[in-house]
Image (cartoon, rainbow, N blue to C red; front, top):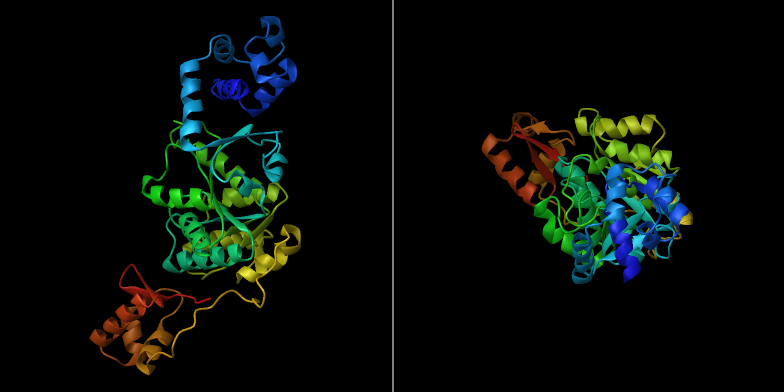
Length: 367
């Protein structure tokens, strides 16, 4: 308990990043020794005056509050270089000194695929993320993402629906779920995977935390899949980090008219692997991850539906995967606008089309 208390005190030290912390421990030995080291020993290290003042007189009340949070929340502290720290993440030169974890810390050592994408995706992008995540978890991969709106949330939801594990890497302390609307999702992830952060309890979701969070998402994973991303998407940062870390990068292509496809197309031009089904990823990572498809499964799951009414089939066949205006559908089918709008509503409820801005509809790819 005392060792953990001194670790938590070091993690609260201002200005003590991962490299300085490692240098400090190399010099003094244990975390406890850092608070009793002679001034001349600390003089050899590039520590700021603020850091040295903390080491001389830490705020033990704050440290004890962190310790109480770990105990009451069921949290775990994984320390770099010690048992339980995820081995793939440990390979990074800027690996976090510690990880705060809520949930099952053992799942961090399992084969993972990172899934990232737009916070404002299309309906088809959301469906694709859910379908891919469900299929990948059934094959034995853990889906790792960032708990953000859009593709991140859909990826977590798909993994949960597939009965597998999922990991959310957070850009704030684990006592502050961000976005707040994902609190229920976060609790589901804790029950079937883990929430992870390098930031201590009470850390707010600062803007600068999220690019650093992305290196952990990529670093935990064998590869990163980008589902939908604009050219200036933060998802491209995660993909770039994955490539720099020597991990696989996958991207799902889309319509040339969809701005959310341009980031994926750029990645593909730069060498990312183009994927159309979850099976493409499994075939690429299967041997490395030690995962196999469930017996008899050779393709991504497809929805089995009864044959549609011919009139509905006519309407559906005139709707493109790019958003199609209603008046174009009316012209193509020869039906009245009222009939077409009624049928589109039914098709939307069936999950076969999605409404888009400007009175347009796009077809949802199945399977």
